[in-house]
Image 1: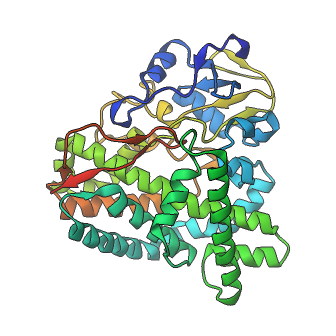
Image 2 (image 1 turned 120 degrees about the vertical axis):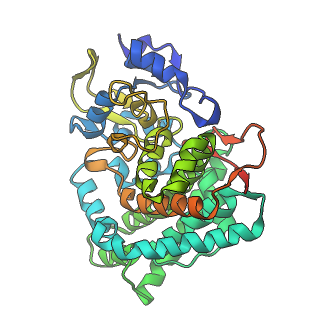
Length: 400
């Protein structure tokens, strides 16, 4: 089977409640490595199994520099590709850039920050309480909370939440925003972060932006590299955790037995976080982290040629029955939930994973303690942003 044989159009349509498309399970059983066609007409390999996905994520025979395969055109709305983020670099550049900010995501650095994150969660929930019931868990808790945590880490003041959210919703759009709108959002966010970086020269602190400015001033990185790193930290820090809080809350409300168990036993919060990551962490289209083979290799009996692109949706791997027993069952006491690939694997393992876990534990732990009766305020269909690289809940109105 060759890429020229591709007949399936990708991405697939998600199932209700943000569940993964049923196509993944069908392909995993019958064609775990299969050619698909992107909306741009590019043909790529789609991988749906846990073991193959681990290989794609961690084997040095796969490169993140997809620009060499022309895929930057296929995912032009993913500004990380366009802007040259280290997420789409290989060593040594990847190592050089990641090493600059890695110290801010170590357990040693984050441990004293945990209490501050928990305090921010309580402050945001105080405001959330004052707005309802009912209240929108997305706009009135998940997003403000993760923005405030990100700004705290970066040593920035929280300014205009509405503008921040417009950037998060515009930049990764596949169809809703025009190329001009996306370009303007990228430019506006870049201008804002450039101001923040310049301010660190006058008021340095113990934060990643100060490190980036110092590295630029000493010639270790370029001005463009400093801005790209700032973009990544600012954007990813508020986008992914906020989406996970909303998706996780929905998941818990859809499984009242699991929610009741968490409310009754706060010690289950760590397991709940890992199961939410396994069960619900999704890259939406599956295009967020494409890779390109640097030499010929075989996955599940299928020959991948050097220069061919592979996409491996993490949510598909995390629902593989070959790795997880009854993978579609949501169980916060699952013993092997932490074997998920929600944060990737290998040298590109998510830089912000430790901080994301702290945020998720704080959010769900406090929601369980303060809002044990929380539930959706209506039973209608939820509005999802399915035209974006991440598959997000637009609004989640709840009562208690």
